[in-house]
Image (cartoon, rainbow, N blue to C red; front, side, top):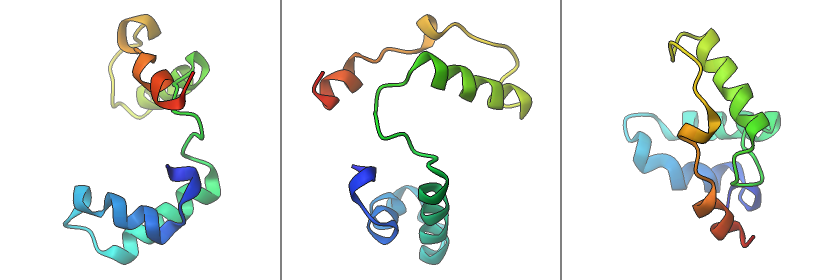
Length: 84
């Protein structure tokens, strides 16, 4: 779980997904994410979190229109993983 690991440990876990990026960049990015509290401590995506992310994605041009939370999000697996 991200909240229990340090930057180097987390960087090692995610490294295979970003094999073409140097390890020092992985560590620096993870350190920044941890410092900024970019990663949520709870795996269940809230409506508020969804709305914030959607606003950022719209502003950045990554998505063209807003979507309904109910149409895109199923939190059941995250709830089971979190134990509630």
